[in-house]
Amino acid sequence: MFTDIQVMTLSQLSQGQDWRMSLAHDRPYHLLIWITRGQGRVLFDGLRRGFGAHNAFWVPAGSLCAFELGRQTMGQAVVLPEATPLRVPQIPRHLRIRD
Image 1 (cartoon, rainbow, N blue to C red):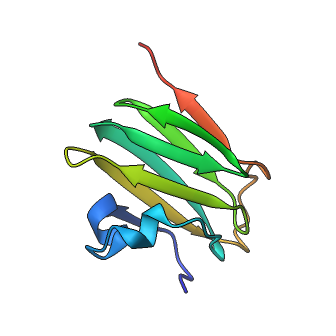
Image 2: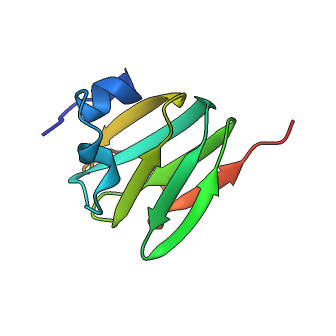
């Protein structure tokens, strides 16, 4: 379990094992993901949708999620402890950044 804010790649987050991201699960910490390359699908609270480069995801602690990442997908993840003093959204968000 994470107690400090950490920044890592998606490979580090999944620990090199795709199933850690692709199976529906919840996490005991908040997660901010930024996709820089590639595409895939995301499952948020039972709703599945596609994503590509320049997409951001906010996954609050305890939210059901799954990420099916394509072979070319690259990105960064920020892990925040659930007890963070920052004001954060309480529902999952998917932002498609166009510009």
